[in-house]
Every structure is written in structure tokens, then in C-alpha cells.
Image 1 (cartoon, rainbow over the protein chains, first blue to last red):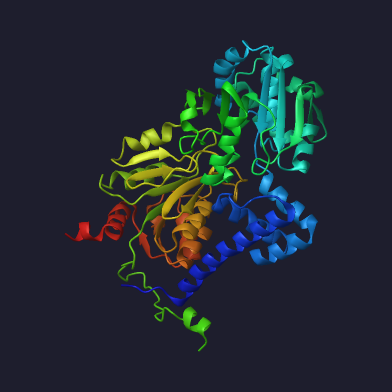
Image 2: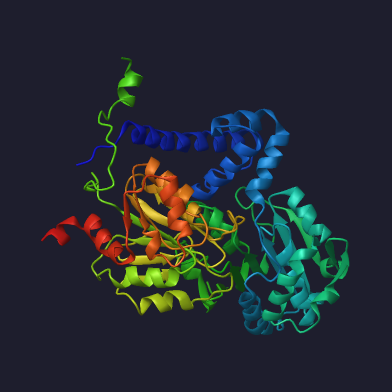
Length: 285
Length: 222
């Protein structure tokens, strides 16, 4: 039997110690700033924390704790690291295609549709949905509430200005998602940026909302939360799913990210699958 | 010697593992992580088709695949093996007899929830141009499973996996690399061999038997 070397024992202690440091940091941030990252999924949280540790020129997570607690600008930067989710317009085009084909006909039967886009990040998918609803002639009776934990990120979403070099991919996604217009008609190219038409955000309310600590603020016919819950651990996913359930009209639609599922959460029995592959569910109880 | 020092020196034997030395981990592996890139389809197929249906240590795979690649990949591998090959879902429990593929355009990470292992996904930016990234999978596996991980670096045209392999070794796990001469693209296993002291360099066809031996010693000896 091979014994573990001293170096390996030290490595293991370092790893356990790192767990303690992460715990202390998130507890400190919660008590001082009120942002609650205590139930974030550990492996992603660790990676993001280490990225900030290096960016701040530090060497340990404890040092980062010292810095963010005493320097709120450092906390702002960490908050950006922890809240920006890299996305694209019409990310997973088949999701939008399924929404167009299976959900839009249901929404046509409603006089007014309230949509909550939870964790909208920089807004690419909000504009995607606005385009889809305009093309389907539904936009005028929709109100989209686009929320995110981070004000700075929300401001970018409000601006609706995205890098021009992403438009090629966005256009391909738009077509694959069943777009029936000309994608370039939705934006104006200016230098390296694409500015999206203000009419797309006419019925969008951008607001700060923290899924972890804030309560329900309305009832919705559709709730999107795509590739946000993957950053939460099981316990927190359960809590947020309960928040969604309490904010959902009967027969309301829940749309998740392509590899997210409600199967492992407490609300599983409250929904039926409309499109299992595309993670579209409908509340039935 | 202070109490702290005694605790630190608790494991007295520092043994430099020779590449030819017998690998007998003090606790049997609980997870296998595999990284592959260019040429990985064929290499994975050779390994998975040579593991028997009772091979119960779960396997997580990060294969560089195109963003738009669809569900066809797990279905393809299912035809080649008796193991249950699936695209990983977020917060899915890690179960014996399963092979979890990192989904296209997501990082796959390993998490511990008490005694249970779980899969976790992320859409953080690509790491060294790759999402899924092999380093991300390996590093999180090392953090979650410590020395009870076997990492396998297969064919590929870049150096992804070498940093993750270093973390696996640092935590006491086992790292094996495909013999570069038998790899369609030798750069990736070569980078790992240069970066860490790997436990084995194996021809592609010898990898499945090795995994069986190290994970199921009683089976292979009887």
C-alpha cells in the first residue's frame, strides 16, 4: 500500500482550508453587504473567487476577504465576476424555436402576458425574446420584467449595445430559432458595436432583484431563468424554484437552460413537461 | 515538535513513485475523469467498448466538441458500450456504471454534497479557448474527490488537461496519459507528460484493462 506523501497531506489540508476560507468570505460578505453567496455551487464559486484573487494581485482567499470587506470598490469587482453570465442572443436556438411553436399559441389566448426574465445578465436573451414576440405580433400585450442581482450589468442590458463581432453568431442563431425577418434590421452598427432598436425595450422593465434574498414581486405567465441556477447548490435551487412557483400563475410556463432540470428539486410535481428536451415546463398544481 | 508540526508530519513516508511501480491506491478510486480533443471520438470509443457492463466506477468526460453538437454524441457512444452514457445535467447525482459527457458549450465540474458526488455546469468563459475545458473538470474533480480520482489524458492538439493533471497529482490521485505515438494528435498527452510525473503512459488499447485493474483489483486478479 502506498502511503500518502507529506506533500499530499499538505495539499489536502490546503484544500480543506480553502473550504473554510470560502465559507468565511461568503459569510463576511453576507453580514457586511447583504449579498448571499453562501449557497452558491462550490466548484464554480471557487474558480470565480480565485480569478478575482489573482486579478487583485493577492495570493489567498483570506486576503480577498480582507480586501472586499474594507474596500467596497473591490467588492463591486467581485460582484461583477460572480454575476456576469456569458450568453448570446438566441442562445440554444432550438429553445426559442420550441417557444415559438409551442408556447406562443398558448400566449395568444391571453389578453395580457407578464414575463419574468430572472437573472437576465447583460440582456442578450431579453432582446431575443422581444424580437420573437414582435415577430409573432404579441409584443404589444406583453410586459417583460428583466431582473438581475447587479446594477452595473443591468445598465448594460438597458443600453442594448452589444459587440458587433458577435452579430455573425447571433444572426445564425436567430435564423436557427425560426426568425422570419432580417436580423440586421433590429440594430444599427456603430463603430464596433450594434445598438438595438429602442422599440424592443419599450415594454421591458429592468429592475434589480436578488433571487437569493428578495421575495416574489408579481405573478407571471412566463418565467425564464436560463443558466443561472447552475451556479447555485441544491438547497438554493430548491428555494429559488419555490420563489418561482409562488410567482407563477396556474398554467404558467417555466423555461430553463438547456442542461438544467427541475427533476432534482422539490417543485418537480408542480409542473408538467411541455418540451422535455428544451426544458419548457407548465405549472399544473 | 509542536502539536501543529506533529499533525503536519503525520504521514511519514515520502515515496517517489516510479513509473513502473505497482499502483495500489490506499483507497480505491471513486471517479474517473477523461479529457480528449482532436481524435477523441475514436479514442473514447476504444476505451468505453472495452469496459465491461459491471465496471462501476463513474466516468466524467470533457471532450472538446462543437457548440452546436447535439444529443447525437451520447447516443453514438451508447451503441459502443454497455455503460450508460449520458450528457451531463446540472446537479445530477454521480452514479455507478454511468459515463457523463460534458455538454456542448458548458464547463463540467464535480461537486461534493456530503458523501454524494454531483455534477455541476457553468457557462463561464472558455478557459484557454475551450468550453468544456478539461482543466476545469480535472481541477474540480481533484478538489471534490482528493486522491480518489484517476485522470486520463487522451489525444488532442493543444495542452488542455495538463494543469488539471497537476492538481490531480498534487491531491494524490492517479494520472495516466495516452502514449503520444498512439494518439491521432500527440500534443495533448505530451503536454501532460511534460507537466507532471504521470503514473502510466499507456497505449490506447491498454487503458481500459488498466482502469479495470486499478478500480476493480479483486475482479482482475481472480
